[in-house]
Length: 215
Ligand code: GTB
Image 1 (cartoon, rainbow, N blue to C red):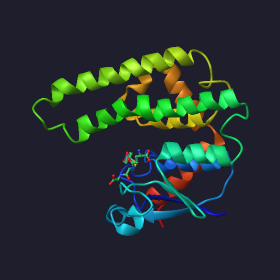
Image 2 (image 1 turned 90 degrees about the horizontal axis):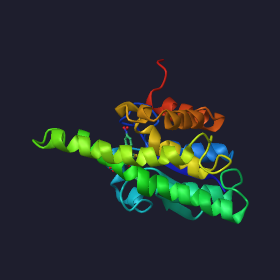
Image 3 (image 1 turned 60 degrees about the vertical axis):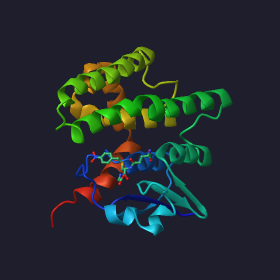
Image 4 (image 1 turned 180 degrees about the horizontal axis):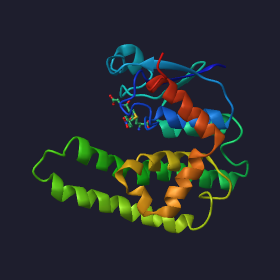
């Protein structure tokens, strides 16, 4: 069944791969499934046709036959369940990988999003300078715990899994803030993710749309 995902017509990051379609592309590349991309503008995201697939009017979405999904955690979990290569066969190992996926979107990503909000949407508020270090410290607390758990392992639980894909994707967003580099083992962990051929293909595919070569 052909797979179609949606992505920004033009991502605000100009092709840095930070929009969330990259993690879905990465998952599809890991399991070697071809996919089509439907590009949507900010205006089109709020139109009924897109809202029928994504109730919150966002990207990415995932369509496969009659199945339409939103939320990257659910999409990557579906890809990992439907195809081989992202989730361990062993039931317990699979459950642990799924725990890491939830940890990525439910425990690590929220304070990272808070930082983006604090900088982009609240930066001009009189209390912004006081709030920012609090938000940064909440992120640091989680990064320290994650770094302690990762220790000197390559991946969070044995072989690379969808748990690592989600975690590395979430951490990538922190790089520009400098916070990731405060935790060298996590910076190296993210770099290992980025070095995977599947990630590189996903990154190049989104770059081709968001920052096409001239001419
Ligand atoms: N929880 C949802 C999921 O994981 O799928 C969140 C989806 C989401 O936030 N989508 C964003 C969106 O559609 C794009 S990825 N926003 C438009 C809207 O809400 O109207 C978030 C994003 C956007 C831009 C950058 N960037 O430029 O660096 C990074 C991340």
